[in-house]
Image (cartoon, rainbow, N blue to C red; front, side, top):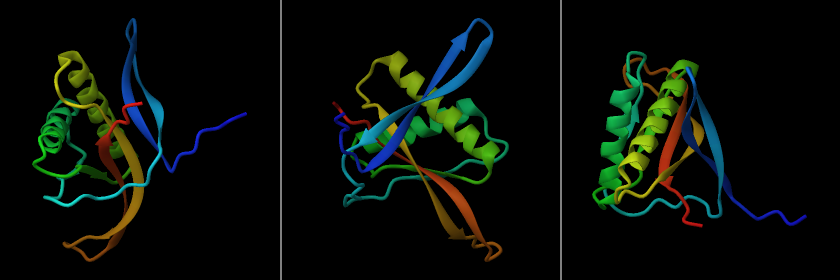
Length: 141
């Protein structure tokens, strides 16, 4: 069997509904090339907190992605700690993609590339492990 080559796996979260049941599915998308950061204004580094609301996150993600599509910045990143905050981030990203699809506008759809990183908090000096989700253009193929 012929399996295509890829360097990384990303996902596109999708909102699903059947009668009164709601859930999110993740469409896995292979990325054929490694990430290469371009030159320009760094993208937004967005943090998801406990009290964030999905609709508010979706609007924030849309604003950051619009700046990326207009060439005003590089790819935005969403950073969060803990399962609840990662879940909120993915729900917000799914809502943003749904809103983009509903508008059928000029914005190119995106994929989410997750990675774990360690960061030292400025407030306490503690080193913590965070989930970072980089928002990148969806391959056109």
